[in-house]
Image (cartoon, rainbow, N blue to C red; front, top):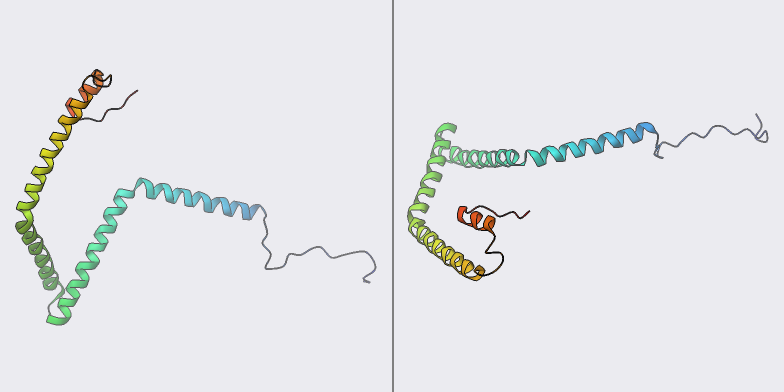
Length: 149
C-alpha cells in the first residue's frame, strides 16, 4: 500500500489518553453513588462510629500500657491489664475525691446564677407582646423549647 492512496488507518487511541465512553461514565457514576452512600452511612451511624472509635482508642491505650508493664515486670497479659485498669480507676477516683467538693460548689453557683438570669429575663419581658403569648408562657413553665409557627 502506498502512502498516496488517501487511505489512512483508523485512529487508535494511545495508551495514555483517557477514553470517555459509556463504561467510563458508568464507572464514575458508580464511584459517585458509592461515595454518597458512604457519606450517608457515616452521617446516619455517626454516633455508633464515635463509640466504636472511642472503644478502639481505649483498647489500644490499655493494651499499650499493659505491654509496658508486661515487659518491665514480666507479668502475664491478664495481670498487667488488671493492674493498669485498677491504677486508672483509682486515679479517677482520687481525682473525683480531691476535686469533687469544688466541682459541686461551682455547679451550685452556676445554678444560682442561671436562676437570677432567668428572673432578670422574665422581668425584662414583662409588658412586651412576647410575654403575652400563652404558648411561650407554657413552654417557659415546662422548660421546653419554644417553636413559633
